[in-house]
Image 1 (spheres, rainbow, N blue to C red):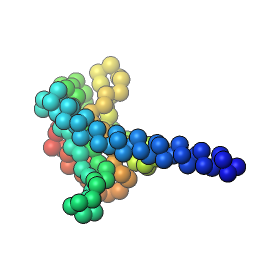
Image 2: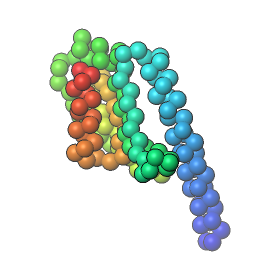
Image 3: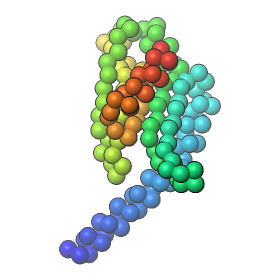
Length: 133
């Protein structure tokens, strides 16, 4: 049992290290999205305890220009809101807006990853969504 606990801790520590490395790449991902999808809205917010401390992920929002145009042209102007829990080492939630298009298929308009579901997260998501649409 002791060996299993040590191995489990080792795997969790390696996984946490991968999350830290991937968090650093998130800035590059956001920049690449902005570069390749002109007119799209990509926002990332991080928390810092002090100016010297490492940033901690708080929120990430994406609304592609093509999805905005498609929603305005091909969908009824009514949106459905959805949220789901993301199960990983660092708990978070995904907020999304969807609509049915002319073919009665689901059409994603925008999505965001937030640190938790609260009034502040939803109001931030809605403010960006209303600005986009």
